[in-house]
Length: 222
Image (tube, rainbow, N blue to C red):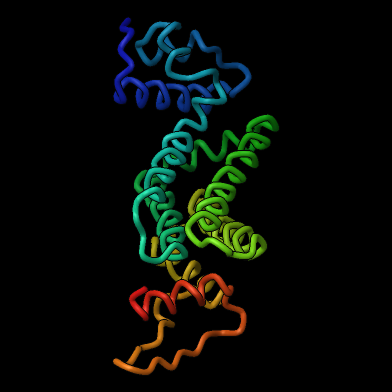
């Protein structure tokens, strides 16, 4: 037994827990069994995770922290930054789809885990919503929450297809997110070229006023 809290130890605990949940069932698996299978002490388990639920959602806790840090970096286009944040989450699970599928199967079987999943999805949505409001002062809250909800829903739909066994390349999600950007009139490819002295700009009527302001300021160098 070891009390190491290194990332490799956390990964071993998660892997052992998923194996036991699949073999014996979530409710029938104890913390002691997980710790023994992972080669860590019971106290180490509780230092690394608060309980069995936290083992199942360990990746999301890491991803939420990483996503928050990514959005805290400077980004020229806040809308594209949120889209890329979704892509980063998808790529994480697509890198090892078999583990993601096994975890998904466990979540679907346990009502308490399904409830936790709903809360976790909302945490991503709220993170995107709050980021857009801060990055685009004056943005209508309805535009912020609507966009955050849309990209989160699209991401989850595509990810579920992967977890249910389909082969889903990242390009599928990229195209879907591009469609959301276009529906909001904020796709980067929709920017208009500017002249030296006179700027004539055309924006979709549906584009949020705060985004129009941001693009105009960028074109004017303000």
